[in-house]
Image 1: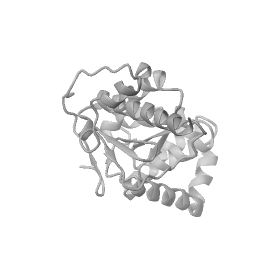
Image 2: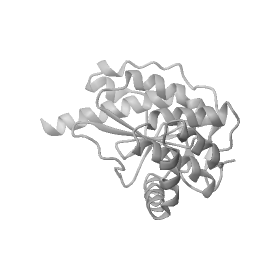
Image 3: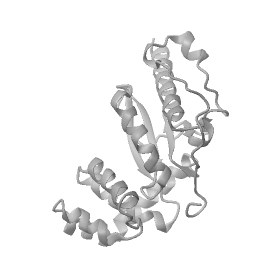
Image 4: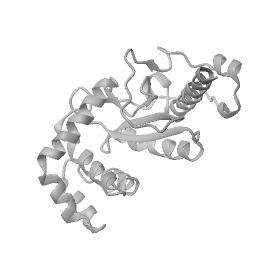
Length: 226
């Protein structure tokens, strides 16, 4: 059981071997795709964008925690999806912070993004925690990790600036509340559709549903602009 009110979803068998070639789907095919709000994903009652998405793109947010074993298991699926993701998908990772125990890795990732090495540190955090057995609450090894990038002093300064750190964490908490995040990993498309492993039935189906929702939002936007 995760900290606070959050929980990790246990891996369950995939409900289907579905393999949709969504990029080539037309309006009729999209309309008939076997994904239904309330059954396969959740449509938020009050859509909220938590990223600055470039015009013509659709935001895709992954809410996660580096200490979460299921987020770690989901990572290869995300990496594979990113290689072939729609060009119009604007992907952003957001560290969930429902409790104090999730704060250290969130701060490390926020600082890494600030310094332009978010992707590298993201992978390193997963590796240290899930392969090397490091505690996700221990900042000491995270400082050492940044020292390897010549940023140890910078990370210490970032941690000491408690007001700025608190502001960033408060913003994350407000954003996760607006998306109704109560489990990780969770993906949110266009600030309005929430995709979880529980509803999707597995990681592969999660990314299939995300693809479908991205293309559907693009199609709707094109229809509104025509």
